[in-house]
Amino acid sequence: MHPTDAALVEQCLKGQKDAFAEIVNRYQHRVYYMSLTRIRDRYEAEDLAQETFIQVYRKLATYDSQRSFKNWLFCICANLGKNRLRSRARRREVHNPNPEPQEMTSQDQSRIDLMDALHKIPEKKRIPLVLKHVEGFSYDEIAAIMKIGISAAKMRVKRGRDELVRNLSE
Amino acid sequence: MKSQDRLLHNLLDGTGPEQRDSEPTGHEAERLSLYREGLKRLEDHEEKAPDDFAARVMAALPDKPRLTWWKRLGSFWPERRFWPIPAVAGALALFAIVAGLNLIWPTQGKILIPVILDLYAPSAKQVDLVGTFSGWKAEELPLKGPDAVGYWTIAIKLAPGRHEYKFRVNGTRFVPDDDGEALRPDGFGHENSVLVIRGGTRQFEQPYMLTTCKGMVMPKDNQAEAALPLPKENRGQWQAVLDKGIAAGIQRRQLEKTLVRLATANFSPDQAQVILEPLFQDVQTGNYANHVLLKLQEGVLKKAPFDGLGAVARTRDNSFRKAKNLLARTGYGGAIETDPALLDSTAFALESGQDQSLLNEVLTAGKGKHPNQITAVIEAGESLHNAGLQGEPLKLIMKDCLEKELKSREIRRVLRHIKKKLKEGLDHKTIRDKLWV
Image (tube, rainbow over the protein chains, first blue to last red):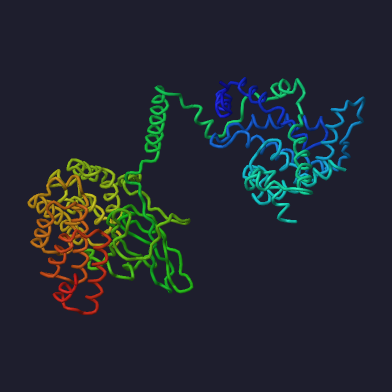
């Protein structure tokens, strides 16, 4: 039987660093995907995912075990992503979202298509859409993570869907 | 169109009505399948973190999670059965700190109450405060003034207890406090103002502040002040008087000080011996000798003649002896040592001419009450006696105060009320009859 997230956090706080390795293994792909929907650049997304885990580990003592760990984790990821985009805008860096592909397979092509379609959606609709359909969060949870109202969350997901379908059929 | 749109999104959310019944047809069905296909692509899409991602994250982690301050504090607390160790250690440390602070700043006898005293004297050139708190020493507590209105003021910190004082104007004339509510005969044909501070509150209504403020004057500790050397002239005789006093249980420093002041006022050792004679009669005078010596110091300041000094010393000594007897007779013998305030108040009441039988009755009525309460009632009685209330009404009011178990503050209110009525010229009996209505 796998230990729960809260039990793993408890072990981490007692000094067992290995328990955090289990958490990283459990969530690494999802956090990475979430980061990739935030930032198109794979290297930078990887960096964001890594920073998310480091930040989670640092702030582990403030985690409230009554709340869902997954929600908390994604909340931190969403906030860090937002900060990163904001600081990037401040620095006015020229961002190269799509490195030149080399010898792409058809699977790669479809992935790029989907990510293209996804990244054409503005961020404030894209993130709720991913949280809803990839992570399976409820509207309440999305509202809490994005720090918006429930009806706003619903509206953003709806519009996100509309734009995704439109972008995919282009 | 809008309702169809809502239906479509409800179906995608899985929150619409029973799906089979409301499944759209025609163009809407195509649209729904397009949406489902697009979302399925999104849901099925997989993005995997690089293989070494977890290892890199673990390598980049800090040593320990950052603990909040309360968790950091809690980490010192051992688990389960070892918890009493830090608890006991903490309690011991706290005890040691409190005990240490108490050693450095003992609170006993050091509580000082700030008081502001003032005198209206617009034409005066110099005003200073003299009183029992400064051993009736002149020019030690000068008042500041005059202000625009003509008032001279002094902010002073006094220990709880009974203080007699007067203002000295231009270095010659002695004036009691203006408000004149708390006056008692000084034994030299004039009157002193009396200020009683008990348990952190003032007995008489006068402007005062409870906060410690800048510019507060503290009278020098009369007890702890270094003694002056005895006069060189007739030193042997002065020394003999001093030795006699010490043998009678009088505090050396106070007696020495009084002798020096008598000498500076040109009294001879023989005259001093005669003046102090009542104190030398037995060894029981130790606990009130200070009051007699203070009276003599006051007399020296007021330039009282030899006879006058002898008389006040005898009167004060007599009233203390009477008070001691009275207390012993009424069953307060133990309180003479443990509660000097009761002895003082009884003696001062007798000295100001209050009837012994009246005090006897009050003390008997106060059996079982707290000595502080009896002291407050006797002090109030003395004040009322000096204000002119006498006889049966005074006795009844004092007994009323005891029976009703009034607190010092309430007694003070009663005192103020009666004095007001006395000033209005009401009959004593009427005042008492209407007092508790």
